[in-house]
Amino acid sequence: MQKIDFEALFDTLPSPYMVLDRELRYVEINQAYAATVARARQDLIGRHIFEAFPDDGESGRLLRASFQRVIDTGQPDTMALIGYAIERPASQGGGMAMRYWSAVHTPLFGDDGGVAFIVQNTVDVTELQTLKEITTGLGSEAPAPGETSLLQRVQEVQQANLSLLQETSELRDIFRQAPGFMAVLTGSDLTFTLANDAYQQLVGHRPVMGLPISQALPEVRSQGFVDLLETVMTTREPFIGRSASVVLQRTPEGPPEERFVDFIYQPILGPDGQAAGVFVEGSDVTDRVRAEEQQKLLLDELNHRVKNTLATVQSIAAQTLRTSPDPQAFKQAFESRLMALSSTHDLLTASSWRGADLRDILSAEFRPHGVERYKLEGPDLGLSPARALALGLLFHELATNAAKYGALSSPEGCVKVRWSVEDFDGHERLVIGWTEEKGPKVRPPARQGFGSRLIERSLKGELGGEATLEYLEDGLRCRVVLPLD
Image (cartoon, rainbow, N blue to C red; front, side, top):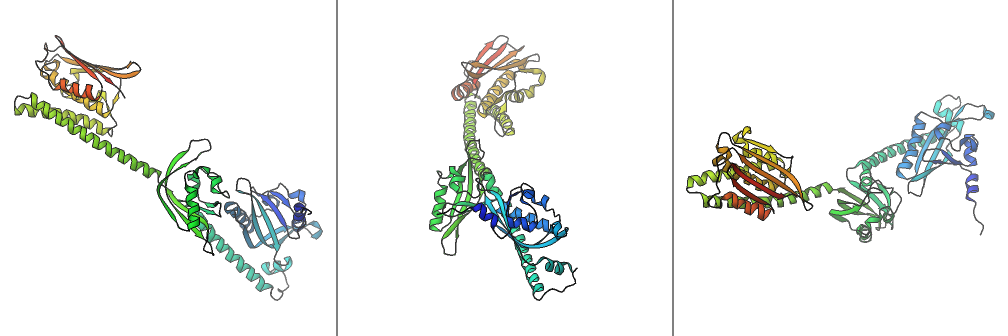
């Protein structure tokens, strides 16, 4: 069977045809088009259509808009009537002649699924001189019978088409700019026919138009979404998903990214009642899901902290009661220790319980005694809530003891606190030195007090640290070593 020469067929078609690329430059024309516009092929190929045939008026605007609709939608566009001035050849007297056409613009798609070329086919809808005389009123001859009504009907059709195109354009803009993601998949292979800006953003602005979903978004098949779409096509029943996890390749070289979406797959039914496609609509709720997860985490953490605080208060009450000789002494000691706990809580609350600075904790304990009574040396260091609470109570006991029996009980006495972060076998540890100077002579206590028990319970038991106390003649010394996170 002899093969058809499609190139020769295109060139010999009796109706004018031309092909433009996406930049509206001529790629090819046939003989009928060259004869219609009175231009040679070599004069047009590679040139921009509006450079070859400039028109800054209404006709040029309408023609540009039609080309753009084809590029944007991937659908053919019809112009029922358009007037366009064409330069006449010198053999016909030169000058410009107004021609009226009915034009159809058809897209040709490239390998990426996007519109690569536009094919235009035009038809002369009436004789040139008659249309010129009817529309401009410059001629002396009256329209032939039927010409006026014919033109009127053509103009009415054109106006109706323009109104329809305007409504379609507005609906397309609403669809494109909708805040939720939307897409239309058609055919048994679920090919992308429409996708709005929000959907393009969700999938990383990949070229999906004109491609089956398994090819456009290959990662979603293994996650079950293609199976869901095929089920909707088969059963013709919608499917609703809530906070569904989907992993998407949102950038060409980036890692897969998990997003959470609310969505609905709605079958599109044809005249025969069968599913012709699926309308996809939904919203990216990743921020909401992450916020709910964070809220749950915070509530769990709050419950944990409340339990720990209550246990600490219970321990303070029991230890204070055990070492207090009378109710009044118990009241003073207990309230003092609760205030120390509260002070550290205030520091942690100011940072949303992310932690507290060691210098701030010490300053809060020494503030009632005056800045001249203490000296702090060490780097700025943030502590976790558990470490901040434990050290806050420890410093309170040391400061209270110094005010009663140690350096802060005499006018010349002072307390120096130095700290540093040191490496112990590859792990960082906080080392704190508490030194009292110029105070009265101190002696070891006859029995274990609250501070000693606090060291054993909080520092050693819960935090893995240790502390040593030295009762020297020139003042108390305490060394604390505490592992850091």
